[in-house]
Image: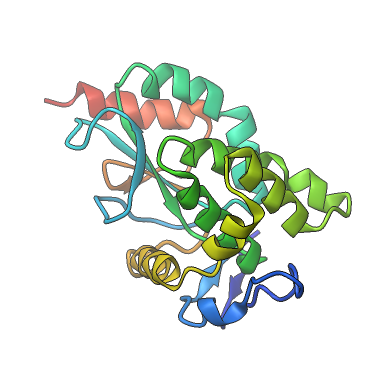
Length: 216
């Protein structure tokens, strides 16, 4: 289910009344949809859990908060992956932001997560993913994002400032371009020590991780 969406995106569909303006995203790179990709390594702005940088095994996930496949992985695979490899510090798990349609919503979600702070970043990402079903039920995405933001300690004014922060958007744009330049074409994309793992089940990831851990 891979689609490539060229062009630039606007926040206007989320809320014309709020200070969420598409002008802030005019430099955003070409984005893709759920379903493919490939690259790894270390990048500026990485958000990580588990073992420290320089760990023997690094697992990189390129994902989007609006990608339903990413949300499904988060629900079904992440708990065991986390307990088996992250909580035990066997791997360094890196999450890289790669917005997919609707890209304005995904971008806003990532900005909110970073505004919430490193200690709350993953909680915000996971909560937005888990809230995708609200949009399917007709809840406006902005309503969900404001709820998640306030739950993370941000006021609505801080939320509005956050999603229109030009410097933060420029930094996010650079991270997206880096992923695109590295060959990522969709989400979720998983890399183990720089090599793409097509099978993102716990069995598929474990096979690649255990092999990497066993190497001298």
